Length: 290
Image: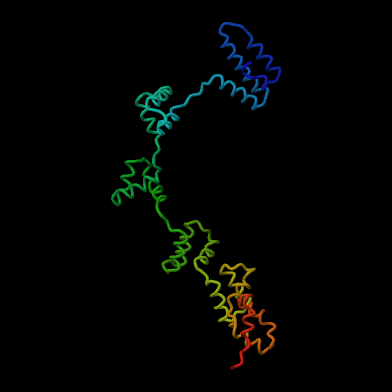
């Protein structure tokens, strides 16, 4: 009744279990354990895995046979959650003698990795004696030592290699060789070389393009190469080109139209605030001498 098997077993299996559980014999618990084992086996063959798992959960909940093992106890001891005596009891229950318990506990303690130990040896031993210091802390085959050591060494990065090329310390062959070591494919190496150099900023692209008379289309392309979005390249060009002074605009408009109809529009183009357009228009007309 306490097993709640009816909820997880087919009727024909549950009825059989109920009959077995009702048998009144000496050593009843052993008979019932045998019955439970038979049910588990039958369930494994007849019903799906989820039902079998449900029976296992019920069985575990009633039996409560699982215990913390020695490794768990060692972790708890390291975290100061249990005492040495409690750890010893758990380790002894797993069959470890007093001596073996001590070694087992040490085996569970955190320990620096091979690269960490090599780094430590380089910093805290005389130059050239780092291997000796490492060997006192960790055992790896001598033929593997250099492989491990290489993994702890600093290496040239892509930025370093690009800088060395720009400073003339690398020829192109050296540059490509180092890029291959880093992991760049031959296809990408020319692109990495191109990225080694910075481009003139957008303002310089405009000024240089105008001096070279390369045309607006080329200037706009160069502006975009300097990180200005292509959709705004023309806006950028319009913004940085030199505009006439407000005084020049006024004098020009006076010669075109004495009523200065277009003056507000032209002044706004060079950045005059709309609130001051009337002021400029008024001052455009000279005051007759007294």
